[in-house]
Length: 233
Image (cartoon, rainbow, N blue to C red):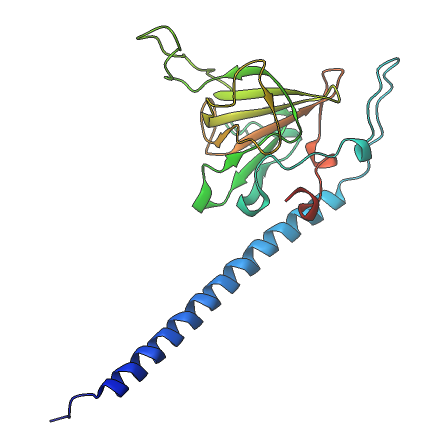
């Protein structure tokens, strides 16, 4: 029969268990940090591979060059996972065709967050005024008991912001819009959370469809205008 452990032995066993647990947590944190850095580095490479865009001929309307209009990423970098669809022509994912005859012009960038934050926070890419706010389907209409918003069947819950430069940004398929800061005519800053990523409207899964529109009303490739991760945080 083994003799009972002394208090000193129990203390040593407890200390050893704490050290092992701490080492395991440190290793797990290091792996997660390494994976996140890999994602950020991959995105930085994608941004750097996009060629410099020349502004279109606009007559009297001045279109700022990319260096003059660098914006934040619409979700926080640490929440980013991948792009599910790029800007430009694509085979419509809602009714795909192997022959390519169902090609459509995809005027935005589809951003997918990490699985752990599938409903990641969405922020304005630059300060501005909310010009369009389409609330989520089913949200009660203020001042009208029993009435709810019908929702946009295609875009879902979405927001448009007019920025000080004359450019606009749009955020589609949101699961939620922040009633504390989001209403038409409201002024928002980059520190505000305007909504959360979702799958409302016509989608194949949870993501943020982000659009950037110049003063002529032309949608442009957002990758040309994002700040680098260390700048945009």
